[in-house]
Length: 200
Image (cartoon, rainbow, N blue to C red; front, side, top):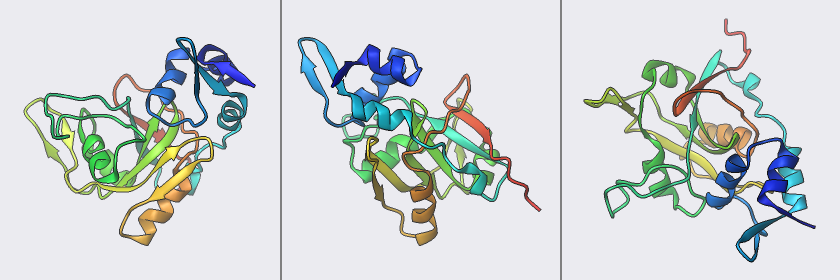
């Protein structure tokens, strides 16, 4: 059975614009066209609906930052430098560039969390580590030049995970979070999520 994007959004309890972001990011398989409409397999929507929340309580910190990414779009540069956001079609070496800054955030809090889950429409699609060092530009935005892409997904339905970090601990962390639901609320690109972990 195939659903329209509107029906899929209704099934998930989200806005149609939120669901279409997943489609535009290339995160869903089995899509088809019916005229101008994008049709989505019911089983793909059910898999998203039934997805477990990210087990952030297993992280050894009280709070983590979350990067709420938009779909990758071209900026002013033709060589990838101006590209921002997430797309399942981007190779890892380009994806890390599109996600490592520049944002308005509390850089020290981002670094203290030790990990930065990247979400599209509330699902973790990438995980960044290596956040200990940051830079600040003239607009008051922060970038993390040493950020490492610990892993990313190319399909949310399964999900299909690609663990790319050199360190085993970072790969394990990415495996824990990728594909999970991680809702966050913020007026900006960076949100902060409490893990409810007791840190001694």
